[in-house]
Image (tube, rainbow, N blue to C red; front, top):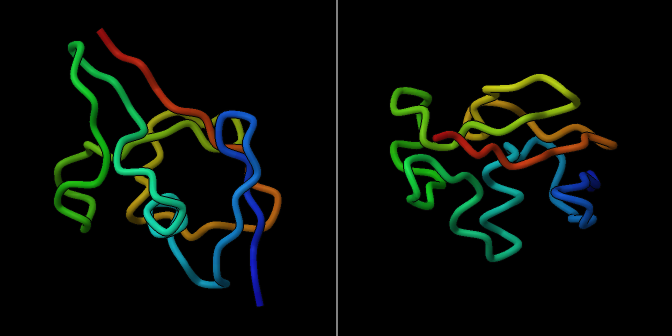
Length: 81
């Protein structure tokens, strides 16, 4: 079974049970957040470093490595100074 999420207006498909980070990595995306002028993506993969945070369905600061992708999720990258 698959899930479809929208990331910055682009539809991506992943497998049921994948994290949002897994769907992004599977789509070839290595970074999806900017902070202090640097690109960030997944680093630790277990929710400690917070490099992978995104806005999901309007909720800021969601850890992409910890959140399962759900069909219809709307994901946006975060930019922090």
